[in-house]
Length: 197
Image (cartoon, rainbow, N blue to C red):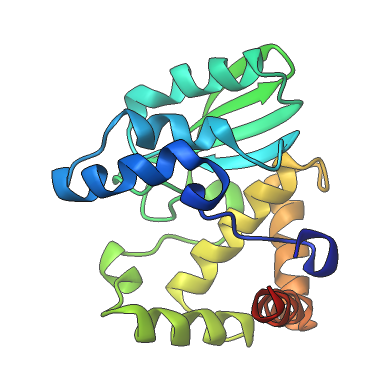
């Protein structure tokens, strides 16, 4: 799907046989384990550029330095101060930027994106059906708190991939992808490709 759609979802147990054996134990424990920590480092795509959401602030430096040692060209690791493992528009986002062997600590605020702040309750959904409907609304160009958070994360990903020079440029590019329908087309291509495999 990566070649056809330009993106892919890699289910860890399918690509890392060892993960298949621990997934049941992880679910039964119901808490984060070392495998939550190691999974992002074992990216089967061997991505040279990546945006990585981190669930705990204390993991940022360890993961950033590990990615630097693994030869990542550029990575941006983000952890919302509100507990989100992504760029947050509810408040500040802790950031580690990896460029080759260098790691730089940053903090982004909603103002850095020019998207305003949102409340965490505006992002809540009730189950997978509502989540899927929200994704389609966002890809259809409907503005909402969730759409703005999606644009912020896309902007960070574009910055990590060296496709834009700044977060604000990333916001412009992400909004254009939504407004022109390119983002929706990518999802449709991924769905079509997934059904073939």
